[in-house]
Amino acid sequence: MTNDIKPPVAAPAGRKRFWKQATIVPAGTGYAVELDGRPVKLPERTTLAVESKALAQALAEEWQAAGKEAGGLFRPEDLPLTRIAGSMLERIPNQREGVIESLLAYAGSDLLCYRAENWSDLSSQQKERWDPWLAWCKKTFGAKLAVSGGVMPIKQSGAAIAALRKTLESASDAELAVLGVAVPALGSLVLGLALLHQQASPEDLTGCATLDEQAQMQRWGEDTEITDRIARMGRDVADAGRFLILLKQG
Image (cartoon, rainbow, N blue to C red):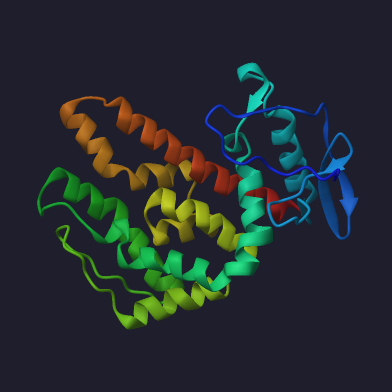
């Protein structure tokens, strides 16, 4: 038997909470999360430990809160910061090149590069909200991305892809873990990088990424499926942004 505690495998109804107190303890150059005095272990048996005390405390707080409602059951969704930390500690170091390639793939299909038909209200909003981000991407990373007025795939230049690859290769494991949540949620590598560089709030970036959905609901009325999807996106982006801020607090 082992005293190590591992994050749960996904289950439809969740798992029963089995601890009373989540705390942090010094561990090496950082802090580890313990449940009733036993360390939390990630799937590859890495201890859940981070250098930032603020982040460690937030990790412990989400474990402390998990399962206190819903009949004492908790699910992986209750532990979003742990998910990002697990990626930082295990997935990125073991699969760094694959993670970079998966993120870079969004540059070829970046949300900001595909626009509605010209002269529509949505097209005007996209130009107003999205063009500045593409200009920021070019200025900051040297990556000029092409824009299409339809849904047909466009091929970005080799120079733009190379510049973005260089940017991702220079990122830390923690930064790649943040991007690994934000970029798929937003459908945009550019907006993910904007979050990473704290150029806008998670709320603003979520709003920017959902112009099409907002326009659709303005025309046809509110749709709970769409509003739920936007809410999930907002939570994911907010979690990634919060992880980044806590990490930097030390």
